[in-house]
Image 1: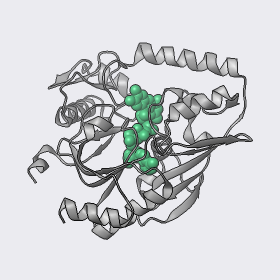
Image 2: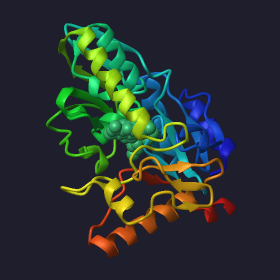
Image 3: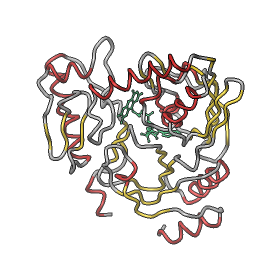
Image 4: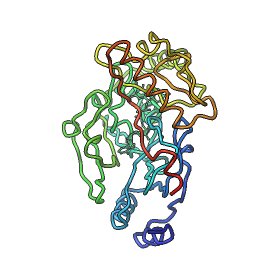
Length: 309
Ligand SMILES: Cc1cc2nc3c(=O)[nH]c(=O)nc-3n(C[C@H](O)[C@H](O)[C@H](O)COP(=O)(O)OP(=O)(O)OC[C@H]3O[C@@H](n4cnc5c(N)ncnc54)[C@H](O)[C@@H]3O)c2cc1C
C-alpha cells in the first residue's frame, strides 16, 4: 500500500499528523537510527486506540518507542508505523500518595515531582532518562530500587485498540523484564504508590547519586546507558574492561573509556558500528570467561540494506 493511501486511511480513523520517513536518530539518545516509514505521537488514549485500529486495518506493523534511551535502531530504519509516547501524552496527578501518570511523561520529571511534594518511592528513578512507559516495560531500576517496587497498576492498550488494566503481579516483573517483552502492548497510564518522605533527605540522596553518575558515566556523549545486562553475580563493565576492550573504536562508535558497559557515539556512529562492538565484546568475553553477555539495549529495525526498498 502506498503512503498516500495509508495517510488517507489514518485520516478516516480521525488520525492527523502522521509523519513520513522520520529519521529515528532524532528520537534515540544514541542519535542513531534510519527512517521510520510512518511516525506518530498520540496525544490521548482515544487517539492511540484509533491509530492502532487504522494500522491493523492497513496490515502494517507497529513499533512503540518512548525517549529511545534503551534502543538501537538499525540503519535501514523501521517499516510500518512507529508510535512514540512522549510529551503531549504526559499528564499526571498526585492524590493521597498515588501518582497516576500518562506513559509519555519523563520518568525523571515524575520522580522529581514526587520529591518536591515530599512523597518517597521514586528517588531511584531520578537518573533514568526514559519515559514512564519505557520504564514500566523494562522494569527500569537503579540504586537498589526498581519500578516493580512502586507500581500499583498500568493501563495498557493492546494492538487491536482494546484497553486493559494490568496489576503489578500480572506484569510479572523481574530484572529488567516485564511480561510486555513477550506479549507486547502499549503502556498508556501507570499508577505508583508513594509514601511521605523527608524532602531534604531525599534531595541530598539523589544529588549524591547524580554526582556519582556524572563521575562514572560518559554523559557528555550520546549513549544508551548500559548496553549489556549484568550476568548473575558479575558486572558486565568489569568483564569488558578485564578483556581489554575499554576504548575500543569501530567507525564512529567507542566502548567508553569512562564506563566499559557504555558505548558512545563519537559523532558519526552508525548502528552497524555499534553492533560490531556489541558482537566483538560478546565473543571476546565468551572466549575468555565462558560468559555470554546479553544485551539490555533493545535492537530494532532493519539493516542498512533494507533502505533500497
Ligand atoms: C545515560 C543513561 C542512563 C541510564 N540509566 C539507567 C538506569 O540506571 N537504570 C535503567 O533501568 N535504565 C537506564 N537507562 C536505560 C533507559 O533509560 C531505560 O531502559 C528506560 O526505561 C527506557 O525508556 P524509554 O522511554 O527511553 O524507552 P525506549 O528506549 O524508547 O524503549 C525501550 C523499550 O520499551 C518499549 N516501550 C517504550 N515505551 C513504551 C510504552 N509506552 N509501552 C510499552 N512499551 C514501551 C519499547 O518498545 C522498547 O522495547 C539509561 C539510559 C541512559 C541513556
